[in-house]
Amino acid sequence: MDPTSSPRLRFAPSPTGYFHVGGARTALYNWALARRLGGRFVLRIEDTDEARNRPEWTEGIIDALAWIGISTDDPVFEGPYFQSSLAGEHVAAAERLHAAGHAYYCDLTGEQVQERAKASGRPGYDGYSRDRGLGSGPGRVLRFRVPDGVTVVDDLVRGRVEFDNANIEDFVLLRGNGSPMFLVANAVDDMAMGITHVVRAEEHLPNAPKQQMLWEALGGEPPVWAHVPVLVNEQRKKLSKRRDKVALEQYRAEGFLPDAMVNYLMTLGWAPAGDTEIVPWERIEAEFRLEDVNHSPAFFDVKKLRAFNEEYIRMRTPEEFLAEADPWLPAEWDRATFARIAPLVQERAKTMADVAPMVDFLFLPDPEVDEAAWTKIMGADWAAGLLADVRAAYAELAGTDRWRAEVLKSTLEAVGERYGQKPGKAQAPLRVAVTGRTIGPPLYESLELLGAEETGRRVASALDRVGVS
RNA sequence: GCCCCCAUCGUCUAGCGGCCGAGGACACCACCCUUUCAAGGUGGCGGCACGGGUUCGAAUCCCGUUGGGGGUGCCA
Image 1 (spheres, rainbow, N blue to C red):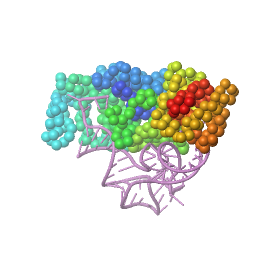
Image 2 (image 1 turned 45 degrees about the vertical axis):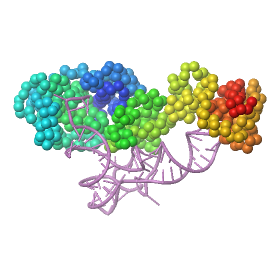
Image 3 (image 1 turned 90 degrees about the vertical axis):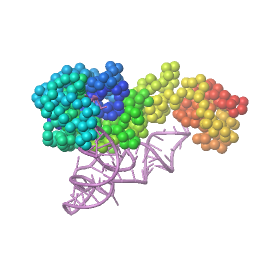
Image 4 (image 1 turned 60 degrees about the vertical axis):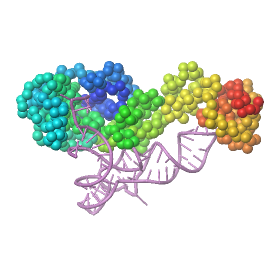
C-alpha cells in the first residue's frame, strides 16, 4: 500500500434490522486500516433493495458502529452516504457502457434464460442478445458484455486470483424496469467516492472480477482488493441470522463490553504479536495488516468471547466498573451498598448481566430460595443445630463494633468446629439461609453489609422453616 | 454440476526453508490456594489432513488426493 495516496476505505452494509457480528469485524478491519494509513473510513448504506430499506435500520447501523468505537464524530469517519441517492448516476454509467459497446440489451425473461440454459446443458446466460443490437425498452435488461480473456484480481489477503472470463456470464446491469443492480451500483459508488481499498468478506470474491471489469470499462483505476474470510458457526457454515446468534445488539444486551467484543472480533483471522491476544485497540491499530489476515474461515466462539469479556470486566478500575454496572442494576437498589460489594462481583462476573443476580439478595426483602440447594444443605443432621448456635453467637455481635467480616467468619468457624464441620461445610447453611443459594459472593462480607438485624431475621426465618425456634 | 477460496492442537492462532523433538490463548483435566462460586498458581491432555516431489534440510516451496468453505438472482 502506498501511504502517500490518501487511502479511502469503505464499509457498505445493507440495512437489515440488526448488525451482523461479521459485518462488525469487516467494519473494524476497515476502520483500523483507515486510521493507521491516515485515510478515510466511508460509510455507505446499500439501500437499493426496497425490501431492505427502512430509515430506522440505518440508525441501528450507526449506533452499532458507535458502540464498537466507530463514531460519526471522528474525523476519519465519512458519511453516511446512501446508495439510493446515487441511483441516477448508476443508470447513467450503465448507459455509458451501452453507448461504448460494453453492454447490450436483452429481452429474454428469467424463465427463458433458464430454459435456454437447460436446453444447451450449459448453466447461466448464453449471450443470446449479444449481437442483436436491441435498444432499451420495457422489460429489457442491460447486460455487460464480458470480454474474452482472463481477469486477474490482486488481492491483499489471497494474493493473485485468476478468473477465466469464459466462466463469467454477461451479468445484468439494469433490470427490466430500468433500475440498477448491485454490481454496477457498488462499482459506480466506489469510483464516485474515490475508494482505493475494498476490504470485505470473502463471499464477495466472485464479484471482484466483474466489478473490476466495470471499473476498467468505465475508465477507472480498480481499487486494491482484500477479501477476508467469513465467520462460521460450529458446523463451519457461514454465520447466518436464521440459525446463529449474529446480532451485535444481542451480545450488547447480554452484557458484553464493547472493547472485549472489538478485541475478540479482531483476533478472528488475525493475531497481535506476542503471547497474549488481549491487547488495547491502540496496538491493534498499529499492528493490523491485511497481509497477515488468515485465509480460512474462523469459528465465532462465544466461549472465548466470554473469556475475553471477563478479562475486560476485571481490567476496569473500580470506578469504571461501578459506572458500567449502573445501568444493569434496578433503579431502587442503593448504589452505596452496591459499591461496597462491587469489587467482589467484579472479579466474578462473566458478563454485565451476571452482576445484579449475583447480589440481589442484598437488596430484596427476602432472598429468592433455590429449593434444591435448600433441601440439600438443610438436610444435613447438623445444619439446624449449627444455625441455631450461629444465631445466638451472632446476636451477641449485633450492635457492637464487632459486626465485621473477620469476626463473623471466626465466629461461625468456631461454631462449625463444635459440629465437626470444616469452614467450607459449616458456612453452607448460613449462606443458604441468608442468600437462598449455595453460591455467591464471599459470605461474611455480604453479612457485614446486610447488617446484624437483617441477618438475624433471615436466620430466624430459616430456623422457622426447618422447624426450630 | 460449474467457478473460486482454504487446510497447524477440540477452537482462535504463532510459524514465512534450518532457531519447531511446533509456541500462545480459549476450552478441558489434575493438583495447589480457598468461607461457596469464581479468580489466581502449577502441571497435563492435544495439532502440522494424506500422498508424491524440490532441497543437505519442509509445518513452511511445487503437484495431486481428500476434506471444508464461498459463489453460482432482473438480492446485496
